[in-house]
Length: 240
Image (tube, rainbow, N blue to C red; front, side, top):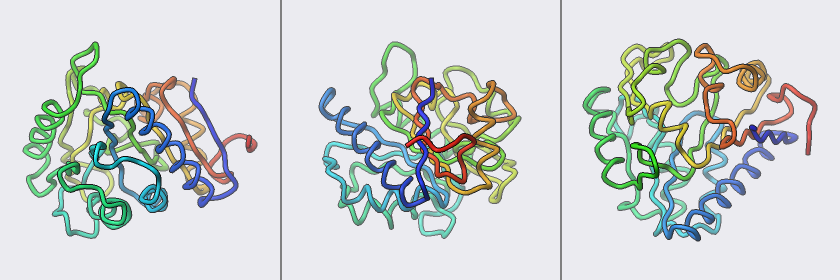
């Protein structure tokens, strides 16, 4: 069952999210000696990353990955890596050897293949065939998309063994992107999804309804999903 926490505003969401991510990372460090965190871009997670930079996490034992990336260079204003670098990686002193960015400048197919190989080489594999991330931070679009998995897209029908996918016709600019597969999100030990603002309320409501390819967020593994939303984005009365 999905864990839904509602907060009074966007700042409270960021605080709660930073606490939950820290808790999950420290649990992984305690149980396995290392941790693997995947970040998303967008406006919602940025403040969470700023708070996470000063959280008690052993970054020297934590690898930082990305859930998706636009096919731009790392200095581009649209780069998810740039957002993470400015808000978390540099302020938090995360060792560069622990940061694994998606090379968007390679293009969707080459970039996705390269990232899949790196994930396969560096991450542990549990009972299945896919490498397992400890925590994935996600936002949600008004259309219900997560990472760069959009409603009705062919990427949602990728093989069960798919790790990373190229996106060539994103409905949101830029059209070329790289994304973790839905399968990778589903095998992650924990997904923390953030939603703020009234424009996200319908998407959150739909996500909590019946699973549908028209709402990719609804396809996440619910028993491993934590949703943190502000009152405006919550479809239900606040439960604090």
